[in-house]
Amino acid sequence: MITASKLEAIFAEHGAHFDHVFKSKGTIKIRRGFSYRMGGSPEKLAEKVRQALSVSGMSEHFEIVSAEEHWPAWPKDRYWEVVLQERQG
Image (cartoon, rainbow, N blue to C red; front, side, top):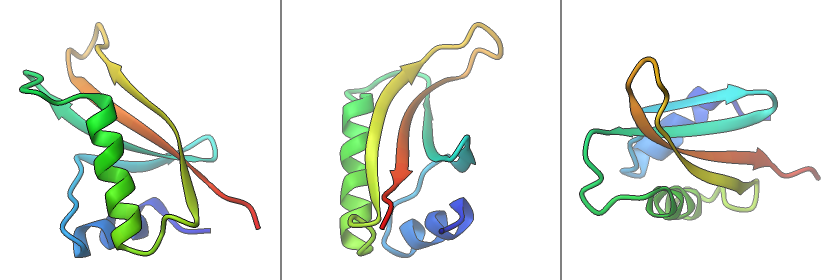
């Protein structure tokens, strides 16, 4: 089982940088904050994560289970979130 910080370091080695990478309830969550969409979307972030997994050789170990946009009432931080599940086996 890989830690979130190790996965973040692997991504960074391959030029993929995200705002937050952390574990939550058995999944790894990757977030990127935004003020204006500027053409971005959860699907585009998921594609960047998919590419980062592929380039780093980790795509066979993880699958993307969701990609969503969040607008919490407080704090007023908007972010896109991609959730990864580690594959068993």
